[in-house]
Image (tube, rainbow over all chains, first blue to last red; front, side, top):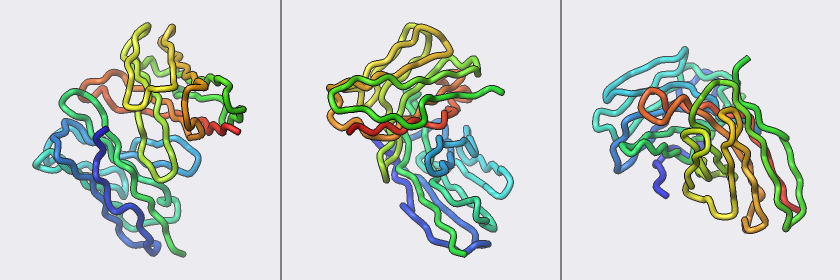
Length: 110
Length: 115
């Protein structure tokens, strides 16, 4: 089935650095969702976006719904050790089906 | 506390045996979902249910079966017909499937290993 293009696949950063990741598709989406998954656990919803151009923050996290409705971005500012994990984007298509990206694995170097 | 529970956390089965994974939610959500996650992969939809007594196949339904007899419960059976059943299985629920009600909340997952 169709999947979103999420990049980068993995990131190695220093503690305190800012992080950016994105998801793109050739299809238009009505909703963008960003999740974080810790090892061996289920994903936890971080941010939900419902309108093109919408910019939403949740603490140090900021996500944007792209104007074209075909992409979304997640930024993490001043990374800390507990930010380690896999970040997934998910988009809901016009037929209400939700598609998940393959995830961005974030590693933080001490 | 409202949430989604999955049991057991780890499950081992011999090849050729059917196994049922439990998923319960007390969020009063109408929709429930089952996903499969393999290493380095995203989430692939197995089955979903929008309402009690109704369910639909997802992208990889072959070798799996589900039931939705109660709003709170959506068990998944991994049958012997599933060629490669070893994986991490995630259950999720949402208030509905249309915009704003479509935020999915996940359980902690069940790791199934077939020996």
